[in-house]
Image (cartoon, rainbow, N blue to C red; front, side):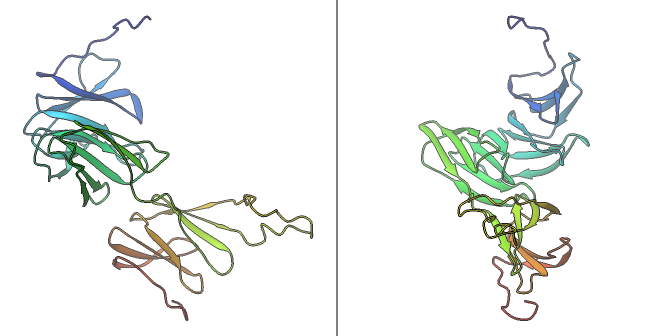
Length: 278
């Protein structure tokens, strides 16, 4: 339509700093304003559906949780806090504190279970999106941090500062996986656990039927379920009946076939015994 204005949404009492569409329902969007509120709107109505109130100063930035399992909105404000909201119950789930100046940008990382926040204090803070534990604080001495960007295809995070941009890799793209003595593989993709077997896949039925070196194996993965923590290490025990997953300062021992929780505790690393059941 030649970019004609077809709808105006009014209701905020101060500047609107950011708007964001809901990725699970693109007919709704949220707006952040210096009137200290977040409003959620629908494209079919000029008035807002509801208002989220809780920040003590103006709200600068918002983001929606990227997948469908949590109805969350993330917000950052001049009160130096980051808040996670449940937009179904319209309540605050958690408040993240630590910045010493206005929070200018927030985001749920689309691939990793991380929350990132950028502030005029010159830092970017990273938090676990499941436990809300502070992971690290980044400071590159480039004055105020204003902007954040990431894609779901990589572990990269781009940051915009007063004095330039920085692009960093978070963690590693190396797979978290383990294979037992029979050729059964268990691996993690974020919190999701899958399994497959590679035994006999490369050999074929005859002498000339085998796959040449370097060819991709035709693996058919099977979903085992979701892990309660973010896996950073995964290892079979010696007889292949159990799998230990370690991450977020904790460990969980699962059955390898059905991902049933058998034991858990606190740990930074995990090593099985080389004999018996591990």
